Length: 97
Image 1 (spheres, rainbow, N blue to C red):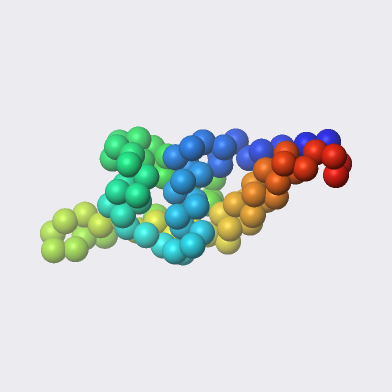
Image 2: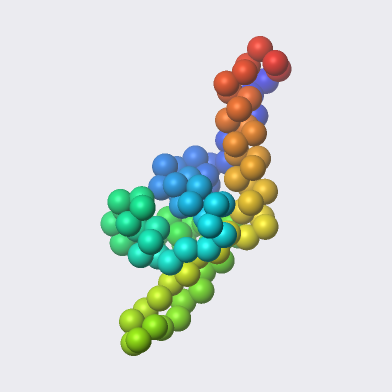
């Protein structure tokens, strides 16, 4: 019938982060925060969940003595995102099931 939706990606903020990264391949934390209008704390938690799932890689470094966090989508993340989109499409056309 309907395909299962990935619970990791079925969160609005996590889906927004993945949607940004699927097109950019990587982005700075501040860029993601600005585009998603998320608070730093909430975004940090959601990024941690995506990292724990293996969907993104997080590189923390310093630039001019300021912390710099760069998020990159992983191959597993690309596959999960594509599967999620396909599963959503199955909800749009249930008669094809």
